[in-house]
Amino acid sequence: MEHAPRSTDRPLACVVMAGGKGTRMRSTLPKVLHPIWGRSLLGWVIAAVHEAGADRIVVVVPPDAADAVAAVAGDATTVVQPDQLGTGDAVRCALPALEGFDGDVLIVSGDTPLLTAELLSDLLAAHAASGAAGTAASFRSDDPAQYGRVIRGADDTIRIVEAKDATAAELAVNEVNAGLYVFAIDALRPALAGLTSDNAQGEFYLPDVVPAIAATGRAVRAAEISDASLLLGVNTRVELAEAAQLLRYRIIEAHLLLGAGIVDPTTTYIDVSVELEPDCVVHPFTILRGSTRLASGAEAGPHSVLTDAILEPGAQAGPFAHLRAGTHLYAGARVGAFAETKNAEIGARSRIPHLSYVGDATIGEDSNIGAGNITANYDGEQKHRTIIGNRVRTGSDTVFVAPVEIGDDAVTGAGSIITHDVPAGALGIARARQVIKEHYAKRKRDA
Ligand code: UD1
Ligand code: CA
Image (cartoon, rainbow, N blue to C red; front, side, top):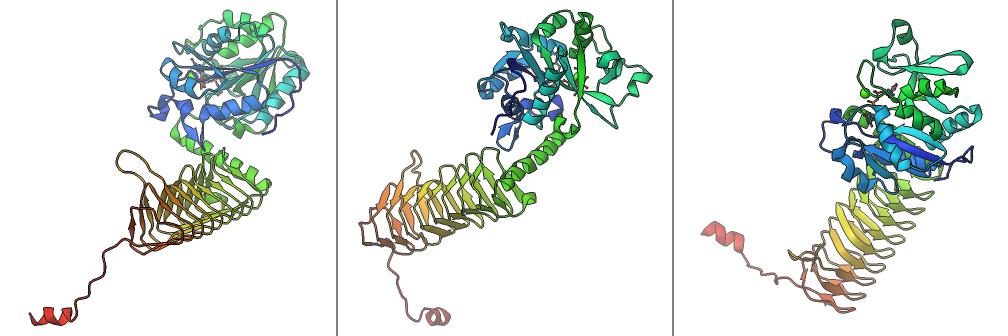
């Protein structure tokens, strides 16, 4: 993805608040690690923040999630918030990790996966343009409910009042605090140090840094965001599903605009890491996962699942194909109905048209695997490879007991259990000879 241009040369750090317990997810998995299209909730936030130009990212997590989050946080630093004392406390916990940093700090929540780099860049641009020491993103809401209210004062400065602390007049305000901010760190540090928890919830409120900064004679302003859907926060699995749906279309729309053919976006599921070249085609009811890549002219689906698979130009998988990790279809290769592949190199123009399992295998070019072929790749302890050459024709229901190798132009007889290599050009046949018992039906009847 392209990096959005930064509107200022000031260094940018980011604090991701993810210290909440996420109990409403009713899950043993920490909330911010729930996956959406191959990336965690937190991963989506970090990607947007990175793209917006943050050089240093600090993620604040609860103690029990520290190890799991650190494992996926990449070059972001994780810090533990020992007790959940509020958003102000969360950011305060992040400060030691920003020791020596001088610049702006973007503050986001770890559970808002719809944030875009564009939105963050707009916020940073508004912050830079106004020259304020702090800028809080706000939006208009018809149902402001529990959101903090943004109360605008003289000279475009603001206060933020939590709903639980607000007067009736303040509650009537429909401009609300998005929970997304940028502060000059030299204004933020002393303001955080002076926070108290003297409020309705007994918490250290991050928005209370606003009056503290104002008291030093520096301004904090609000920047109104028009598309509030980008701020959707995930607290329950209902909201997780809602966010996933929106991100699903975002991924698909980006591919469509770059020329990939996606026949039915409503039944197509594509991980964020999948690569689609222009003029590939994804048919309905298809799931593309992980590092799957479809070259131009390749087709996947309908009703297929592809994980970490590569389809070269003109390759086809489907209908009803299951391509597992490490499947590589070279140009014009085909995997058809009810076939499963794994860790398999399938050479140019080779075909596995139906009802087969091909795992830990290498198939050359222009070979045809008959219906119902199985590579018996596992002896109960180890996996072994099946190697099939070029222009091979395998009979229906061939079982390859690996390790085994079939030479170029070789043929196997239908129903064969191939336990030994078949040399190039040879026929391998391994099955009991047919026995004919004449007049069997009559004899049975007369008995
Ligand atoms: C906060 C704002 C509110 C704003 C709303 C927008 C405060 C006091 N209020 O409300 O003005 O309208 O966001 O969604 O900031 N977190 C921690 N540690 C904590 C508490 C929270 O890391 O001790 C994290 C949460 O994991 C979450 C984020 O901070 O990612 C926001 O916390 P949340 O409880 O959702 O904020 P609200 O109190 O609802
Ligand atoms: Ca709260």
